[in-house]
Amino acid sequence: MSFLSRRRLMMAATGLVAAAASPRMVFAQASAQPPAGPFKVDPLSYPTNALEPHIDALTMQIHHDKHHQAYVNNVNAIAKDHPQIADKPIADVLANLSNVPEAVRTGVRNNLGGHANHTMFWQIMGPNGGKPEGEVLAAIDRDLGGMEKLRTDFNAAGGRVFGSGWVFVTVAKDGKLALETRPNQDSPLMDGKRALFGNDVWEHAYYLHYQNRRPDYLQAWWNTVNWKAIGDRYAAAKAGTLGV
Ligand code: MN3
Image (cartoon, rainbow, N blue to C red):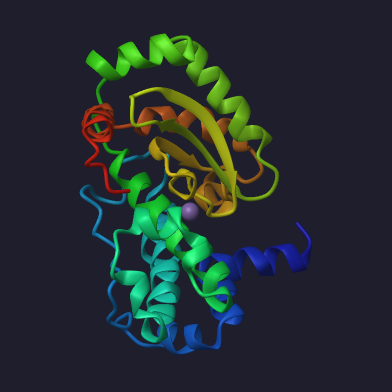
């Protein structure tokens, strides 16, 4: 690894890339407590080592406490001058980015998008995740060719994401599933859809343990999936009550 890429990785790991990009963030990172704001990172519902050996505790800790927190700090900083972005549900704001003032539109897209994606991500993982069953399994069989084909296609799509992004199974209002990828922190919410579940293929999600072996991470990640949570999300999506 070159010095530059090593330095960049270290900066990314400590959230300093975000800090360097935004003068406000220097203050936010320096204080012990993140600034108060309308958006918050929910605590994990399981310990950071609960997904080992598939995802290591340090990756979980940095990813949740630093990376996700940085997106939230950034969007809270925007909300100080543009409080209207917190007046509506997150899904509504992201589905109508053209209504966000142009000066902060990219910031909202990246940081509120990142907040929504990570909120979903922590929720659909966990220890003892069980197996797909019931309605969600029937939908996977119907729309995605069954679990084995889904796993193969999902991992291939995640492997093809160039640079940083996500691979999702999206769910439409009628319950139909689709496999989709998005760059950066774009979210299916931006197209008025919902993510049933998704995997983060940014290097920060796997690099400490897997380095350049993204395919190995994609494969191992399935061991962390919480199918009970995904079943609940599927029911909520069909009922129109799934937030992010
Ligand atoms: Mn991430």
